Image (cartoon, rainbow, N blue to C red; front, side, top):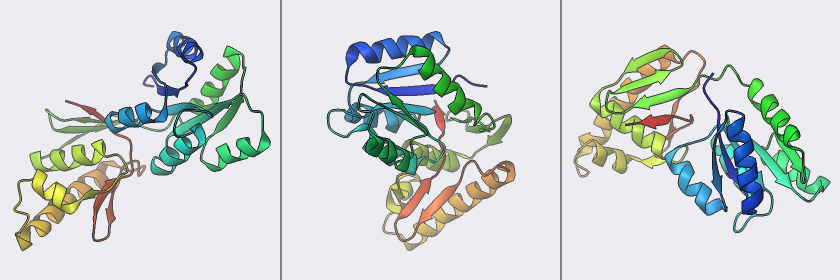
Length: 227
């Protein structure tokens, strides 16, 4: 199993660094962020396997962040941390999509036990990696070769994660004239062929390209991009 990636969002720098050191020592890949805006910037580049979110943060709080990303990325795990052992906040966290709620202060072993439980429940999830230069999509042990057009479309969708990429953006990416009535049809041909390839090796339905009517496409899976 690959090393899980965990993003920690904690405005107490000393506590955040302590948690990061603990998790790295346990074999996790960790990055630390002070507030939600920093986390947002990193999430555009790479999606982690789990979020460890403090409830009280500058700007968006941990529950708001959990709701935003858990709704967009159903396979993402989130854990809320808070000094407030409040049932109302706890319920809000679970409603937002968080799997667990940790009351501060907590023992290191309590956090590690939570993470072991979170990841052991999802061992069957296959990692998905898009190798841009070699034009290959790797799902678990399966390798799917892609065309230049397909790699451009898929990498763009992956960078935007679950956000919709509008038709005109993808047409420009494929160097299709925006004022040509046939360009949209050509884009749909590329997407249709890509969907067929994905379906052929995507038996567990871990990756799909969805259509937002009259607007564009979005991807409902987490893909790691490698140039």
